[in-house]
Image (cartoon, rainbow, N blue to C red; front, side):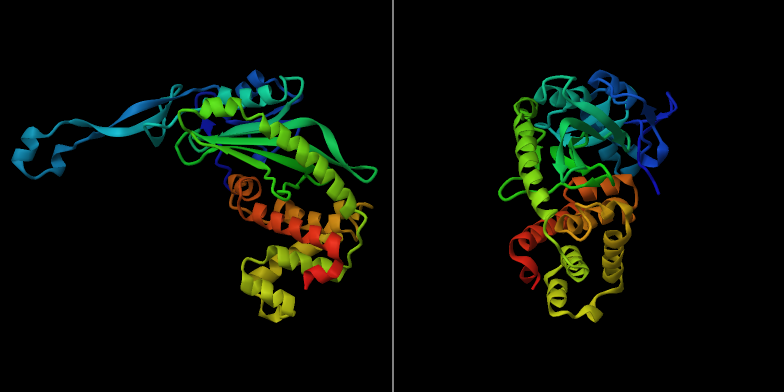
Length: 355
């Protein structure tokens, strides 16, 4: 599979670092201890700046047949109200943006984390890197403390931030709890709360980013609620048959498929959908991480079956596609949210919630 990490031909390194564990096809720098934000920028090859430069078109006279046009033709013409974003270290253009677009430098993205948790002692930078030509960067940072389910099932708390330098997306910060025993990303929105904050690249983007301490409050509130919900789910029993149906309902992509599931018309499922459900069910029943007291035969285990499928079983085109699916509102995130809602309903209403 392709990795899409930026490769710097000058340094001979991929733009990525990870603490202790190999990731992204084993590429990038593996460091033995958690770095400061300044060190993380260096390790990940993110120590470049991005500037907006005026955009011009180059007129090739061979494209114009009329001699009159050639006489008045300018070699270069400025494109009004549009700019190119350019890396200052290698002059590489990253994208085309409008006049109101505000560049968020890589160091400012890290300072966001430093500020909301009170400096380097409170946040542990675990991975960071850039994709493509450096037009998109991402950072994951581990927060102190854990969500504890049962006596020994621990869930680490992470903040994930990604931003683009090509105008393709907003600055996105998300709270992402990850179950230690299997690295499952367990992110889901609770009631009227969301686990994601998005900030547009406008003139006020840096100011809004500095004021985004609500992400930390969001993480704290979600942590408290999730710990209570997950511990409740760990006490609610669910049969294998019910787990299978819950998985099918969570993975259903449309109302027609959902209706077939509720009516028990399994033969009408597509082969692709059947295989997806079977893979997730096999993970629920057979994976070693599903044999803990908190997961085996519990609603919490059913939820982990869906998240585990997207995190550890499903094949993706590349690592970037996996991140987009699970952390950036893609299919994995959507199905995880559906599974969360189904599990919550099952914990409250039992098997009737699946009818």
